Length: 179
Ligand SMILES: [Fe+2]
Image 1 (tube, rainbow, N blue to C red):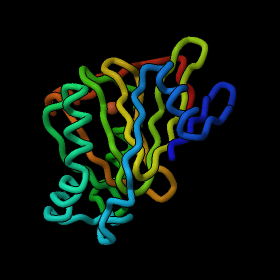
Image 2 (image 1 turned 180 degrees about the horizontal axis):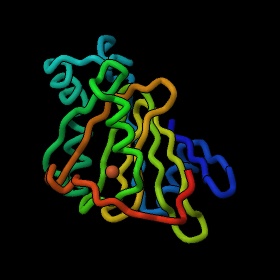
Image 3 (image 1 turned 135 degrees about the vertical axis):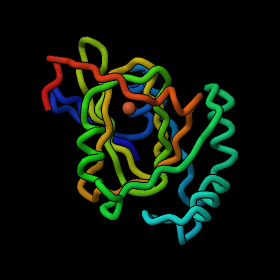
Image 4 (image 1 turned 90 degrees about the vertical axis):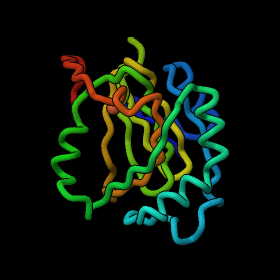
């Protein structure tokens, strides 16, 4: 279940209702999918064949189509990152810059863990959203953020797009951001 850390205050927020209500105020959509639907071979499996990816998309077909229908997303795929991913350190370095997109960044985590660091409103500043399997997040268009992995360095997620080209990152140079 997702947990929030507000960086300025080092304050943590946990519990589905509290997390959802905090994120709602920051315009970030948060939902949760049922991980008990996952077949055993897809639980915490990070080296997925094309067939595995297809079956993962089938398991969550209803959830994907429901979310897509409500939010206007038109295509989706699976991303899997782990220490066996070629150039993982370089990839993470590229991810770990504050940036924006011209469409929502949508991730439904199905294995592993990851963190979105997001710029909140003036009073809140930057906050971390720690995600694990079942967590679904949509960072709105134009909201500064970046993504990184947690200690286990592995994640599998469904990504949804209006069009994949919209996911190009525009760097957001922010003196207010301190690592
Ligand atoms: Fe992004």
